[in-house]
Image 1 (cartoon, rainbow over the protein chains, first blue to last red):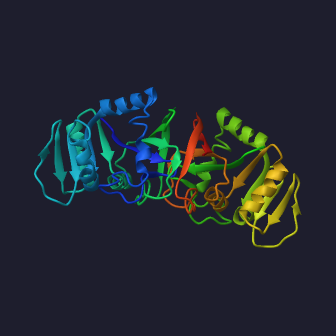
Image 2: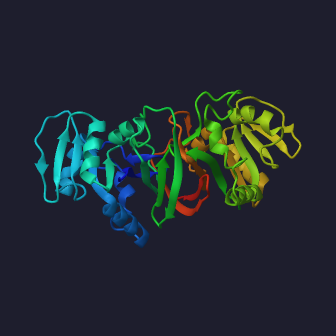
Image 3: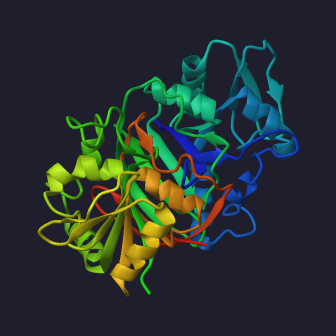
Length: 189
Length: 189
């Protein structure tokens, strides 16, 4: 069975987006520099990591806010696989070019269960800080796959905040430096 | 001339100490596991890193709280070099076995200037989150040398909080994985 993987690029001080996230700044002010490793500045190592994530993903669980902010940019599902949006809004599935968005009203646990089924032996990738925090609090994340970007943002949204769990032990399974970010992988124990 | 180096072990979620720091828990509750890499669990790589820090240090700047909490454990200066304590208390220098503590009432900038003089060509190591935050805010840190420990502490003291500067660009100059922590080094740009 695949794993539930929370995959994020964060600044060294833990921010995955700058302040004032919105249509004008979908990654928050200053947040776009976190993602340079994926785009213009990508090195071979970075491309290999991005390719590996793509090869392993079988389904996505994302939050409503990530969905709203991302859709105009993706113009598709974020990866070409079934994508489950956790939301209070009741809504019919939304077919896109590569796959469909399904809207889940029963919380993150049900979203992960449906995503696991859809992913079969491949991984479920978690997008959106709030969803990742809820899943970490519930012990439902198997792996953290982070790209640590060389900047202190000082403000914005932190990945590791509001987690309803006292402590989480991790095991570091991989560290790969690239010219732009440090790719680190942790098994959640 | 040496560098001003902020050297800390932090959890993946950015905490350098657990909650409720005090005499009973000098690293805060749960914080002692951050430092296992220095003690019983140290690997060759970890020992090399610790030796390198020792070889480079020429003076230390520390906060009053770090001084108060550390003194009973060190029973000496934290490294065998002149150590400058930033405090509001007026106090005569305190000679210890290896070197002396000097108490600085004029703020972190003056403490760093005096420590630089004392260190000559070697590095000034900064201890204590509050002092490091003030120096980062003032642009007085040359290098971050961090050991990232494989745990989410969820609460306690974060290294990168309360920094009076909008953003800080960094350049990653070294990444070394050990079985226990990830040693990362950043030049502050």
